[in-house]
Length: 173
Image 1 (cartoon, rainbow, N blue to C red):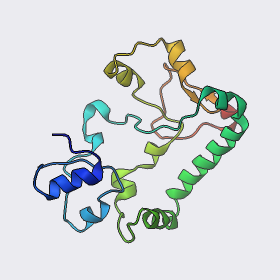
Image 2 (image 1 turned 90 degrees about the horizontal axis):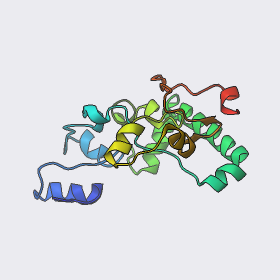
Image 3 (image 1 turned 90 degrees about the vertical axis):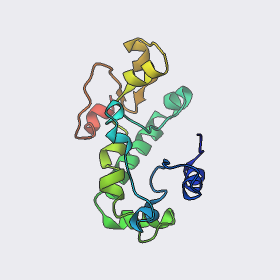
């Protein structure tokens, strides 16, 4: 039975019309910590999608060509922000306040949103996504489609599991 987004799904669950629902953090963090609901599975529990990229930053080709310098600076700031978010406890508190979850969310970084999940330099699962979408692209077409600002995506390249960002010199090629 389709339930809609996280809020609608939660309402269906509370009303007893469904036994299981879905959500994405930070939705429901307060209810988890109050033991009103519990997590029975996470997306990474499914072997087919473990470690698969689920979020990307996009721009159009024209902006990429015209504003590569601006986009490069944006990506540097984005990477620095992620580093700050996982190194300073003040960052988590600010995020929780912004999300309206003051006092909730202590499990967020380690159990729900690991730092490497936010890396803009990591793209995994492209072959699986293309297969699921019944799309056939050559390696050249995929490399043209995907541009990690400052570096060209290579389908044959293994992505480091450490989530380490490439050196500045490799991003500027």
